[in-house]
Length: 373
View 1 (tube, rainbow, N blue to C red):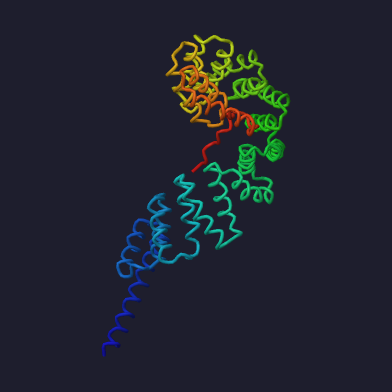
View 2: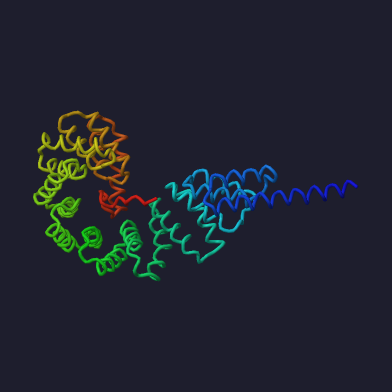
């Protein structure tokens, strides 16, 4: 008798669940996603372990653009059924939409294990790696897609930038050349191509590219700065300074142009005029290593030893491989009689010169663009 009652109860509960699921699905078809969520939640009161209902709530939250709540529901569903089809991809997409690229990566990798040829998962995973600055991994997932679809210029630009910021300059140049076949007059592509040429050790070709951009578009943002930067690397300080000033004429708040113009003035020994540019640059962009280094040089020239030391230490913090700042610190320590600290810094300088062939100052223009959400 008891068994018979249990069977009847189980049959009744199953019918209730089916009816409630049908109601929720009807509301979804009508575009009533908030009402559908309530219907799914009522179903969960009957069966809290229904992973499909939890996943459906996540989908409806996503449809409403409430991605944080969607992610929470997807995670609950996957905790019950780790291989629930499609939900890893949905979770990855919800995290991506929030700009949480690091959190999106494990979910998208799981989605690809379920479906290795899923194009959406491949693109989202590649873009998530791009968004976290892991450019070689971004290339791995995105390059096959643009090889299969040569017309996807937006994705090709992402691949080109990823190559550039991975110091794979030949790869970058190849992609920029492809982009210029589609749009020969794109200033942005010409500027990035110039950076790739500079990375390949072809500064004159890089300069020619940038001069071409400026002839066609004299007010193109960052063009004068980029040209000045390449010239600054060549120690052509007079012409570089003119380009930095030209950039500031178009954009008076440009922090990098101020920092590098300040550096040129420091090279000239014009500390009084350099100070204003360097301080303004740091106020706008506290992460500009060169500005902190030059401010240290100015303070040292003014015999403000402690303030100089603070700036050199900040330059080292921003770039531990900055041999010039280590050297300046070593000299200051020695002047203060702190011989052990001075010797440690001098030893480090020697090691850096022996082991690192990389340039000490990273191109400011190699900061990636924000991935669109």
